[in-house]
Structures are given as structure tokens and as C-alpha cells.
Image (cartoon, rainbow, N blue to C red; front, side, top):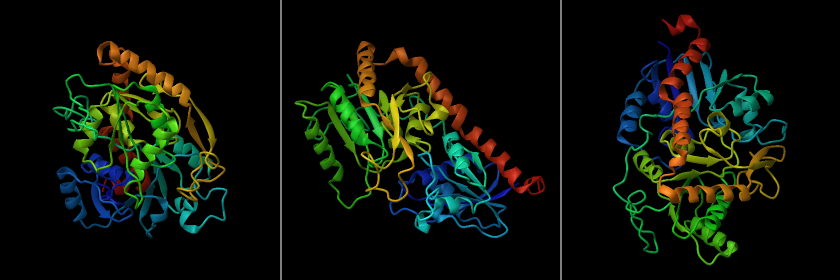
Length: 405
């Protein structure tokens, strides 16, 4: 049996940390797995009992691995001699930092770090195509971020009332399960790429006052009032007399609470400009929720017109009027592209969904679409699919003599 050491910030609040935990759950019974925690982010994740038990058990194991898999951004990569090393890396725009940019600071030259690995794994065909085009000579395999589709399933963990047990908005308005309003949600860190400004502009100006908008967000900032002040600024700029109810959630949520939150959405509505995977979208689709988003970047692997609502978009350069230069320099540069949602088209499609929902409060006309969404995630991202594929790749990497020793 192959001996594998998983290296990553498995206790940290990041996409890489959650992917690492999911991957460990998916594959731990098929290989001899150990875990080496490292620290890459400052904020700890709300670890549930199941994760805690697994991390404690596998973190205590000592072995000499045949393969190391690094679940982190390339600036943390370390290649050990005589051990095959895989870098698991997702990227959300069309070029890797450092490619065609030789003057970039070494810590951000991820192109060079990727090429130090024996192999690169990534969650999407989009990333593989771009890594190949950017001369990642290590070679890239698509190993989708695994999702527990039995856990993220329709009807699981339904709160008794309200949205995530919240029965009242900050202004005192009630949100009860009885007569539940049309609810649109988005789960995203507040940054330029996630494009929350567009999400709020579309939903606040399109939906009527009896609808509810839920934004689960956070921001890496010492300013504790950043989100609330930004929302107020957006509302002032829109100049509307009345708005739909808006529920902001900035707390860290356990998976149980996140599942309960998604279960309250009628529509998961993403305005992201680019994704390396988009775990919240995948979780929502696995739960049979109607999802809307731009079908570009990683979304292309599991979204299409049969299982989701595709929003119109155009491609534009990352730096410029909607650039990210102030927020994440210098990983995003002028020669990269990302997608900009067509706000007018998104507004029209959201308005049509609300009109449809008014008929039966269930969006029944989209039952087949929602079923197809879950089927797509089971096909592309389930534990069984990903673990079987990963084991095959590991056997190819180390050779059959080691794999079956």
C-alpha cells in the first residue's frame, strides 16, 4: 500500500485546508496516509468532531512516505530529496503568477515553484489547460476537490425555522420558516475576484422588499466594520427608496451550520470573476440547489445549461477599471484575464426566477435542473470518484512495485 504524507494547513480557515481535510477523508482507507500540519493562514477553522478525530489520528502517525502531497499555495512548497512530491494547486485566472513576468518577487514566482514539483494536481480542466500553456513542465493532472455528497445532500440538516436559526434580521424583521420568503444566497470572501459589489447591486435592485438576500462573507482586515460600511456605501450609490431584506453573516460557521444555511437558499447566486474550484457552489449543487453563475474557469467542469443558470459575461483584463492591483499585488497582473458578469442579464434572469418562485414557492419548474446539478457533482467530485482516480495517479507516480509492496 502506498505511503502518503499530506502536508497542509489542515487546521486553518482556507479553501486549501478544507480541501485537504476532504481529501484525507476520501482516500484514507485506500492508502497508508499520514498528515503533517503546517501553518499558512492566521485564522483557525471551526473543526468538527469527525475532522478532529481524523486529524489527531493521522497527525500522530510517523512514517517514511513514498509521496508527499502539498495542499497549499506554491510559495510554501518544499521538495524533499528522494521523495516524490505533488503540489495540489488551484488558480482562478488564465495565467500563473510568474509566467511571462521574470521580474516578479521570488515569493510570488509560483511558476518556478510549480516546476520544482514532480507533479501538479489541480481541481479543474481550466487550470490544467492554463498550466500546460504556461509551461508547467512538472505535468498536471485534474484531481477535483472531493466532496462528501452523502453529507452535502438534499434535505440534510434543515433548521427548524429561519435562516441558519436566525429568526430576526438586525432591524427586527421576522424570518420564519412558515411563509418563508424567496431567499438568494452567496458565500464568498470579500475581495475583488468574488465581485460582491456586483452581487449586491444585482440583488438589491432586482428583488422586491419581501425577498431575503443572504451574504456569508468575511474580509482579511483589521477594520471590523469594513463589510457593513461597504454595504451601506453600495446602498447609497444605488439610491433606491426601499430594498430587500439583507442578512450579513460574518461569523465562522461549522460545516453543519453551513449546510443548514445553504438549505435555506432558493437560489445560490455567484458573481465571481474566476474560480479554481468554488467549493460553496459545489456544495450547493450537491444539495440539489438551483445555482446561478458565470460558466467560466472551474465552473466549466460541472456547470452547464442542464444543471444551472448560466449568467452572461465578458472577459476582461485583471488590472484596469475592475482590477485587483490594490488588493492582491502582484499575483494578479495585466496580462491575465477573468470574467465580468453581465449585470443586466443577471438581473433579468434573477427577476424571472423570482416570478417563477411566486407560483408555488418551490421553483418546481427547475426540479430537473436541480436533480442534474446533484448528479453532476456526484459524477465529478464524490469521494469514491476522486479517491479511485487519485490512487491510480499515485500508483503511476511511484511505480507498481512500491504501490503493491
